[in-house]
View (tube, rainbow, N blue to C red):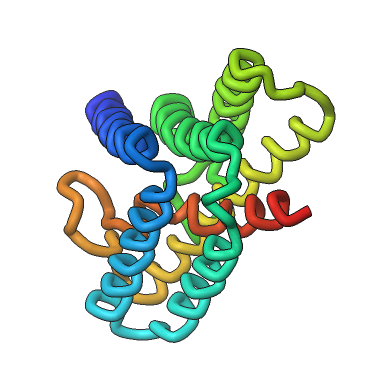
Length: 205
């Protein structure tokens, strides 16, 4: 079951990345509208499926969107944005894999299935992928890059935990059943929602 779910996550990641690369190849500005659609669907999920505490998660989504809207996709470096996605996706996949495969030590009560072993495995794997990507696309590998990688990983985990907290408050296992085999759009993009806040700050400064 571990490997089946792992492969399912990998497959979904490949599909999402393929759609993203096709859209960005046609016109990178279209990525903005695609992500805008994702935000809209997430808000709908919260309105439809969350019975209580709707206002707080909606404020959170709106704040994330404001940070996302602050990014100028007309001048955005596509390689930098791709690095962001690589960090988020690889951390999500490998923290899940290592957590299920060797995880024994619970990380936090908000999300009982998350383990310290999964976190460490996700950090190592995501960092390696980020460094390989940076080397291949000639991104300067220095202390600033490592700090950036760590912050995105931390924000990815934070986004996941925030979404888990909102689900627990509503006694939900999944944010919706829109995506077969997954916990909903909010659940699948939870790491991105918080990471884009950190990314927006980096882009601004």
